[in-house]
Length: 106
Image (cartoon, rainbow, N blue to C red; front, side, top):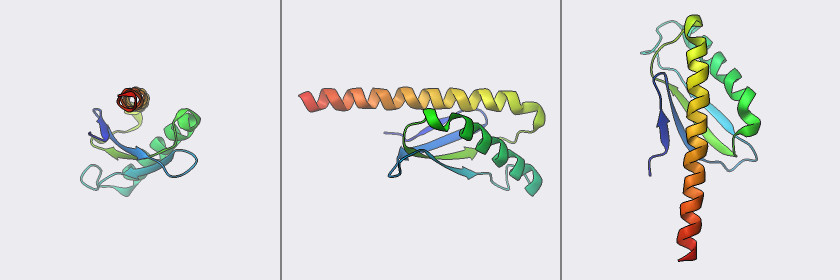
């Protein structure tokens, strides 16, 4: 089973967490943004988006990898994509739990 979900700007790799809550790791390559100022901005934005939704994310480890550079003008689009990816992740987890439950009954 693939343990990642992709969008235009972001890829989220995930794994069931061993901790009590959701944890976040960030990867912004120098290939994506040459200047450290730009890489740090992208990480700051993602940390804030994660912080806002942390209570709704099940206990798991997430690594968010930026695949396309974004700036201030793209903020709304990145925010929307991050939310959509988390919704898709929740659906995938729910589907996996349903599959596990049906296989356990057999």
